[in-house]
Image (cartoon, rainbow, N blue to C red; front, top):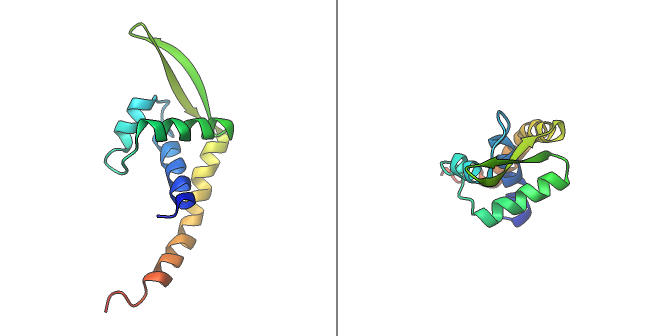
Length: 104
């Protein structure tokens, strides 16, 4: 898969994972596991990129004597999910064009 396309899809997957409630790294990976395999190093790169893009915010909370970062989706992050859903029809149209005739 094209690196840029995959990057964009993973960004939206991570945003969707925290859409309904704040979450932390391990839980995000666990929540995504049935849908997409994601390493910790890839996840934290994505989280940093989304934070830099103002699509999420981070807060640190002490949990069992350790500090845990919780990620919260912003209005910009919610807007990115909606934008992706609107773009999906176009992506599927391109897919149908590329795959046409494969059913024969």
